[in-house]
Image 1 (cartoon, rainbow, N blue to C red):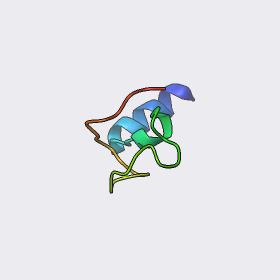
Image 2 (cartoon, helix red, strand yellow; image 1 turned 90 degrees about the horizontal axis):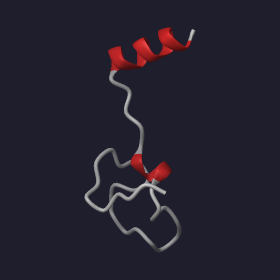
Image 3 (cartoon, helix red, strand yellow; image 1 turned 30 degrees about the vertical axis):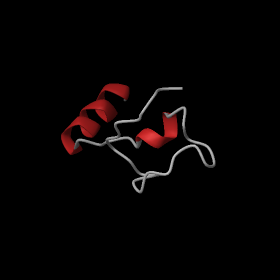
Image 4 (cartoon, helix red, strand yellow; image 1 turned 45 degrees about the vertical axis):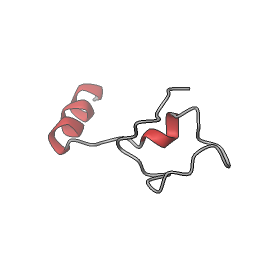
Length: 47
């Protein structure tokens, strides 16, 4: 089942939003207009 879902995601090129795992994802830390649905961000740092 996992392999099927992984293949399905790759076919549709599902992208995750970076803000969900960014260390700057809290009130006042990020003022970018793309927030909370950024797919690319020059300030992104993983939590």
